[in-house]
Length: 179
Image (cartoon, rainbow, N blue to C red; front, side, top):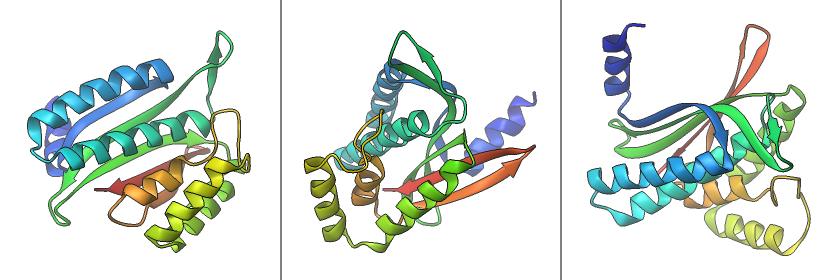
């Protein structure tokens, strides 16, 4: 492995924090504690730190909900492989949170439809949709009420960006939000 090349890519992409590996609820709590400390040291803006923190948690939850390779241990303890990047985009002058994980082909349409719909709403409509979903049992699944992407869109300063990548007969889901 060529660490200087990796370091240069991270610098070029403005990456402040990165993680690649198994993501579980317990590990998410640990990881987000470390991210919060690191961001608080680097940023003077509490609101940005809070927004990055909340979006990161929601996107990590999304990895655990939509993963091709979910490992279930001791009942409801899920863990899934994924990647989290937190960085600063110099061109947009905004922070970003970017995640990637392998998904099942059947989840592609579900995710794209959901994000496209959420992106079509303005902030007021997103808040109303979030309230409606929280009050009803609609769109619930074993990992939550399906409100994470709405929360991400509500907090983000831009529309949620996403892409699907086919690689070696695997389907990877990339999602990015800006603060």
